Length: 270
Image (cartoon, rainbow, N blue to C red):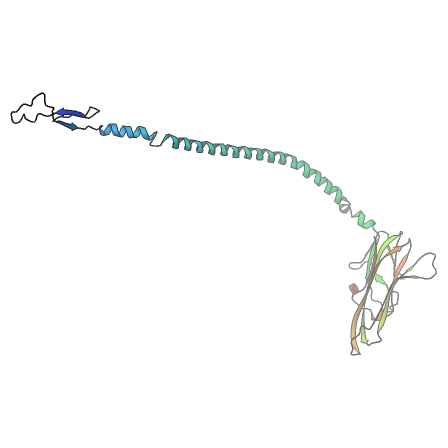
């Protein structure tokens, strides 16, 4: 029995059963058929499988999906680069405009601080004074002060009168006037007290005019004969006239503390 494997369809062959025994089969009888099936060769089967799977073993639909994904990635990268480019252009525009704004701001600052650099004309023109306590051998009720020691000063035409301890203003206006005194009572008892006042002498008035006043009493401890320290502060906004002279009075000047900065007196125009 022979079979041609190159033939694409199954082939049928006739086999002589009696050839081996010397018997010839009659032509009218139907021959016994033995089917012989043939299959495509291995190379053709492998070639057919390769064609069905597409390019490089990937189907056409999968390759199309991958291609679309790559296109989306490239589009996203392009949009990102475009936004970065626009931001860089905006930053360049800001950097070009920034030096001009800084230059203008510097001119404004120079103009604003020019009075202070040139000597603080605004502060010097402002009427103000601050004087501190002075120790005297024979203290009087109207206190005397130190106008140029430590933090003490006078400016804006305010003058300190050393002969009577007054601060004289050179213009009319609203002033804040203040004074503080500290007293030490060595033998303090329930009767110990003192008065603290600020008054003004004005042109055209025969007697001084009280501006502020305080009375302190009952500040000692329950046990008499002990030393005690107390203080009084006065401050208010007052209307003063040109050439007014302002004073401070204390009823117990011998009990004043010797600390310079514990006693002070001052005023400034509001």
